Length: 152
Length: 260
Image: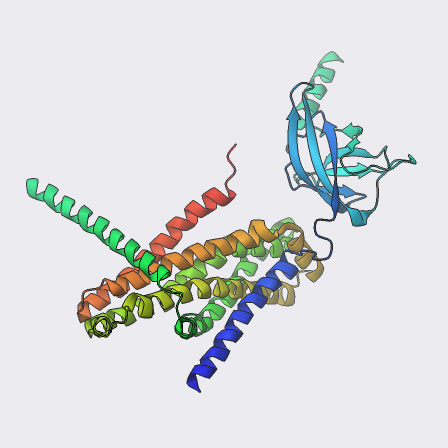
């Protein structure tokens, strides 16, 4: 009898632990069990990514539709190649979609904003976004301003 | 001078010997588990170590969660970023405080009990009589406690995290009036399944092995006197706490640090 209550108690305890883990996974980290891994990859070249990190969000009209998975450098052209995953549920993007690196707020993290195009054809898995605009680098802006003020 | 050097040498040799004894005991105990009827022993120990620790874990989790929410709120409100309370709370708990505080409490509540129990078994010669009867005390006494500890502590950590986040919700959302939408969505936006929850639980498993190993060994290796048991129990709590904090630093360093 005593052993039985202990076993029931331990069963409930382990169950509570597993439920707690499930709660953490679903409610706190917000994983989506139905559509995990259902995404396609796009690349884009930028002149300067200035502080963009992997796992940064990719958004269109402010809504997150993907994540940056990798940032590489193409030494030959002196450009950064950003690899991103776009969720399939977000739908397809036109071939002339533009990508720009923006900042959330004044001091916020860098993210990629996709701008809709008007082309008939759609981007497929592994395609490259051609129309890109790199991050605004504050130092360059200030340098620009100083030279202009000096010239006038 | 020569005497001093000799004492230092003896101290070092003693330490190395006890590490060696601890390692062989650990290996034999882990090796020795898979046998008939051992599951019942493990279940009983999970009851002793896990379920009986629940009360202290839940109480501390609730108060830590609510205190964290309160502190985050007062600081973040200065920037008008009250909604970030959820993110801060979840990250701090999942990555650091959850595993570490649970392990410290576990060392104090369950680790000391293991050491005292095994120490008393040794001093009353229960362990030697087991050997006389042909029962291996490493399999019968030590192994079930090791396994039970390794199973219990991660479970307790998960429960700790959930209760602490609930405590944060009670203070932050219900009482201080943080917008629940921003609180939860900010949390789900930032928290990653493996990066935050998975690595936190991995830490907890490492701590579980450390604490139960130290507790079991100190009991098994204690002097069979009343004083010896007392010393061993103290050592369990002290060594476990120091090891948890030191190993936590190393784990955080390897898991999260990004070197430029």
